[in-house]
Length: 345
Ligand code: P6P
Image (cartoon, rainbow, N blue to C red; front, side, top):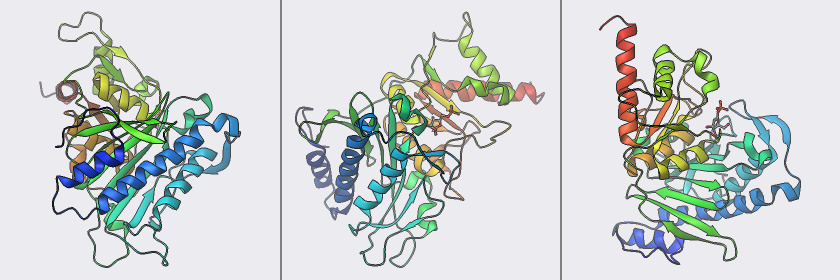
């Protein structure tokens, strides 16, 4: 791994230096990551002036997964497509905003990579100017022929070639991994460059923060309800002091916990047995980032997220993600309580 001082290293230079450590690299992934950085700048510009451009509000449409589509969602989705559709690096795309796969137009060359993305996650926060984000996941094509198929999209997260997110907050930060550590870059708007600001991010082994939407508590299984109650008990012998933080924007909640340590969970419920979050373009990419940073990511039912093979494009999955010790602790708590409820102890 090249050694970088964190001053004035652009993301392009960092990616290129990283490519040089892989002699067989063709440069296509490098160029694809450049494209991701470009689309991040395009979306950041629009997000940062949303209030001025008066493009807030809703299109009145509903997307593939039932969320109200805000104008910025649509803008971000189109921006990704327009930057990526003609480069010859991709064979297919999948987006939260589209029911089916997004084919590369016939007139353009096809490449060996698959891009799955949530163009603007947390969009319900757009009008309140709270942090929102773009999440992306990159796989290699696995089927024969030049055109990508849904099979190329339905790969387990362990096969991701790269994953990351862009957080549009007080500053715009792009965080990604290609399996060789997690690195964060902050956009300098005056230069129009993402500069290395967080080399080799490692998440704390344990943290004080827990993040969940407790409004859903009544719908959770008893073990989850008891775990959340235990986190709040003042004098629980084995409970470290905790505080709750939840902004209802996955990228914002995840990024804060990645840096400060802690645990985020979105369990299944009576109404939504598989929870709310989507596996392919939200949970898998964040899980690769989390594991690369030393954390853990599971579904709370005994499965490592990156081992789950998706069966459909917008599949949802329960999520328990964050600092290793916190996730271990939560899993052990859930198992013990489930055993009690099953009458096994
Ligand atoms: P709830 C935003 O709509 C989102 O998909 C994620 O960004 C966020 O973590 C989650 O939903 C919030 O869901 O049910 O707590 O509002």
